Image 1: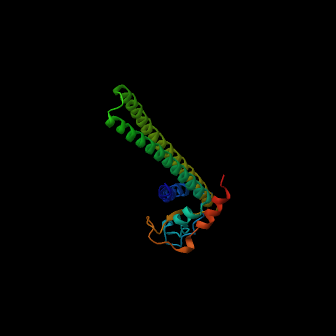
Image 2 (image 1 turned 90 degrees about the horizontal axis):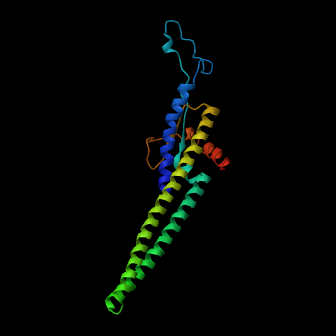
Image 3 (image 1 turned 180 degrees about the vertical axis):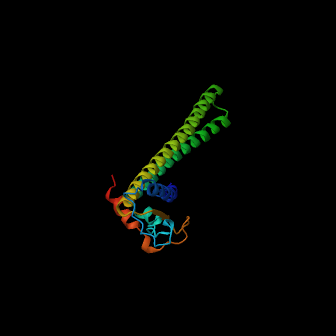
Amino acid sequence: MPKQLSLALQILLLLAVGYLYYLYFSTKTPSTAPAAAPAPSGESAGAAVQRPVRIAYVNADTLDAKYEWLKEQKKALEQRVQNAERSMMNKKEALMRDLEAFQKKYESGTVPPAVLEKEYAALAERQQKLAQEEMRLGQQLAEEREKALNELTAKVEAQLRALQAQIGYDFILSYSKGGGQVLYANDSLDITDRVLELLNAKKN
């Protein structure tokens, strides 16, 4: 599950690039866009000097390790998974013990067939209910993971929008030493600490 959140964090940051690209070019109007320098005589307007594109990046590994809300969510989900696994294991072991006891009764030949049939039906029902419970718990945990990922996406996107509005970045990329689309990033473009400050300041 933590690996899924880490991977989702990198994915949503990459998606944020597309959002900021759209935001930058769809909201720029003549009144808000910086005026281009007048083109020297003999040059066309298309050759006029344009404002440099502002690019920054967020280190996904650092965000994953230091975003307090994310760490709390991963810890809670890990605990839920451990509790569910422990509960299912105890129930399976209890069922196996009862099945072994039933097998011994059957092999002894001292228990009436009607009693054996009744016990077997009860064990089969327990096994079926146990399988249904395991499926239900799996679905519940999957829904909790999805909810956490959706909240993570919303929180990070909100702060990236805030940074874009405050500083005017045109692109905010995701960088990870473990892989990703960005192979190298200059430390001077790293705004991870600023993003973390915003995220950790609004945990609720």
